[in-house]
Length: 268
Length: 258
Ligand SMILES: [Zn+2]
Ligand SMILES: [Zn+2]
Image (cartoon, rainbow over all chains, first blue to last red; front, top):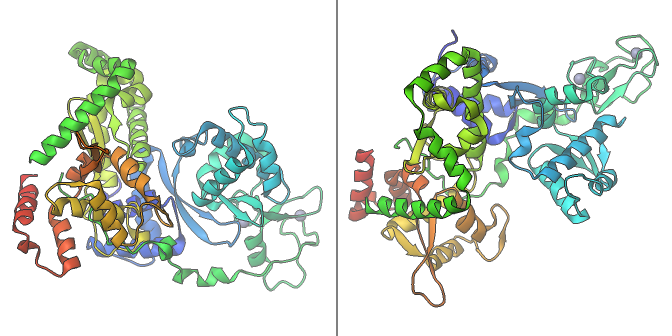
């Protein structure tokens, strides 16, 4: 039997539910905050033990707090995942049928692509042939914005990629749907979409960009970790944010300054 | 609590109207009362523990998804979409669901309308003042809501809508303009908060042109502590909460009666 959850665990879980996904540094700060508020015993480097207690109780509900890495900056994140879903039902309550179809098509494009991204032009073309209900150009742009805002997609210069939240939460779904199309990173073993690939045709392993940066750091003659062939790609720099992240606080910066409400009080 | 009574009546008449257009869902609800004890017995033997566990998990997830949007949950919908053929052991499943909400999430499933069997989830963890947004469970719009609830409470429980809009304008939230944080403020207040049952927004009879008034909704009555709210107003005006004698009396009474 796992130990019962205290109020500190419950507050942590509630905050995870309303944020969807939090970075490892946010999670560490939240861990401290929750323990302090409820006077629970706090050990700074025991975040994973703390989360394991929550996960033990989530198991019977087919939910799980899972760690994942951002393909862009290599940072770690925690997301609350539903482990039963075989479809993107996680999004079903927030989007209309044709919006969900657009998301599936976008995912198809991204998984199929070599770069792990899809251009807005290609997505707009898809929107024209949706079976559920066509989306106009303006509507499509609006929906894409919503996907980005809700942290399902990332966008940079008109190129869309799957966010870390999307990959962590929908890993099971993606493996079921795309099967062999999905490759994992040779270094970290997570799903690899935005990555570099070994050019030896009988090898062809994939490695995330941040994983490439870390793996080849200080190696003057980069060779494939699997087959030993020369690694012909440019080795990316390790991103600044990887070291600065611990200071970053989440989305709070642009929050309104309205007073803290005391809704949801104890009485009921 | 005459206020609460008024709110209940208003919501019941609303549900009644709705039930006329969706008769099948109400049949669904009626099924619950026709279950006999021998049916319960047979059903319990029919399902394995694993199947029951799975049903409990499904109901928990169904309610959590509804709650994310603060949509009140109808028993008929739980029956129709999740419980299905397990209807005979509905109350056993719901009891276990309630225990999960309590032990795992710190939430409580409350029936706000016993006649039509409508539930909401409320938080059992104390809200923390000055908690950074990223660490606060919940929604950024609650600040806006809290201001409106305060105004209504301080003005005796019911106010004309203009007073709400003017108060918000003073706080530089113009209901006529698109707000960075809240979007269409008027829609959030009169539509979203009303659907979530935080506010009631009703036509004042015999007004020409038509005027509307605001009251606390059922969810606000259940979730928001009037004492806490009075403390907040006190801080705002740098005044002792007890100096508003009538409000303080009502707030204290509400706290002890629950
Ligand atoms: Zn990797
Ligand atoms: Zn290779």
